[in-house]
Image 1 (cartoon, one colour):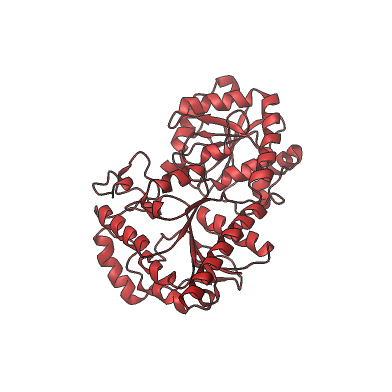
Image 2: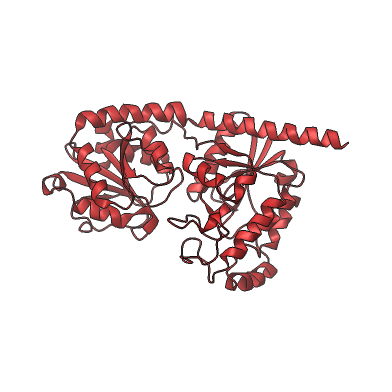
Length: 414
């Protein structure tokens, strides 16, 4: 089986990491898996750069982006068919097709002779421009009159109805199988313009050998954290990212009882350095962390992982916390409830309710017995439901079905 993944990057960004983990899981199953990506960060003969935009692409891009239409000027995408990775592939697996490396209008040509899977990592494939619609449902009826042109990926003018129609044209001229990693995204896809395709639920996988609980005392010693501290872990590239909810975390921590604040340490990972006085409690910044080993140490050192997101699919950091046996506090949004299960693996607060998020933190921090039980539950759920081998096997079964169906159709045509 020869599989080609097309993605924004190999390991830069959540969708990239999710796709790369699937790639590694398939390799472990003996599958010839390769990646064609917009941004290459690793050195591997199985990873290649997607065709770069030409001078003509750049000129067209100035026009199309002014018109409010992103990503349709990349004529170079049609050269993918000439790439050795594409020519050797038996099945294609599209992942994140936004971030200015790929022209989605090329999809019908790419799948004409090869079966294809589209793995959803957000809502972009079914909206007029945005990756997450938040409270807007206009993607169900064709978009237009967009309430937030600045929502990522932003557009300069409201051509959202036209982008929605262009995507719909692509799907009407394409055969795809859709994979959604969360129950939430399955339900969203079924009510969208993607409902014309088979929609499969296959959650992300995680290497539970790499991500597993580390001795807490050893982890805290490695990070020079006092053994008697109550440690909250927070991961975000920047506090200004409203989707990740840094402002909600700030309000939630301010609502903590003063007696508890004096015992708490906020451990953070992310590019921006958070000032000690930002949250009014002791803070330890680890900076940007890409190494799995350091992540495992941070999760293992924490009593709770706090994830105040406003919109998400199946967050990888929650999977990492789960596999490391660290209970979680988050909001009841998107695919978060798949991982944060009330009373089992953590606490789910009502969306946008910072006071409820704070109550969850207090409830779990003050109940050692409950946290211990949740630690065991987290690890069990990770191993039983999200082990990387399970994900790879589910994808492999889907690939085999698609290839067999394509071969049968070819024989029938002959």
